[in-house]
Image (tube, rainbow, N blue to C red; front, side, top):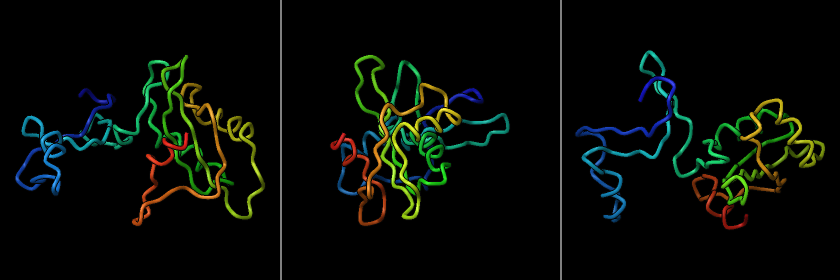
Length: 157
């Protein structure tokens, strides 16, 4: 990919991977064409460095623009009252998909309304990246290893 253009990170070599444990179909898909398809989206710079933007399965397209939830989550986490954030893409009649954000406030933080959060995000993000909805929740669903379960949030949305 040309510098500055987002694309999937793929790799090949004897030390990359042999397969997904007991998941033949996932292995075939991941090793398509003899290359390991990581599912990570990155942008390369002029010096050849890669910067991971997000996971392909998490990216959504709103009004024809790619939106990387990690970027929106970083903007949310930049608000001092927000302790945790997760963003997912949800279907939208007009835009194809829009963002839905789930945030956990710090215990001693003052309450924030959805409008307050969106107003402050407008200073940090382009309009098409703004989530259509922000929901303040007590906690985010997690796996036993602590990973946020975005699939649970998608079901909930």
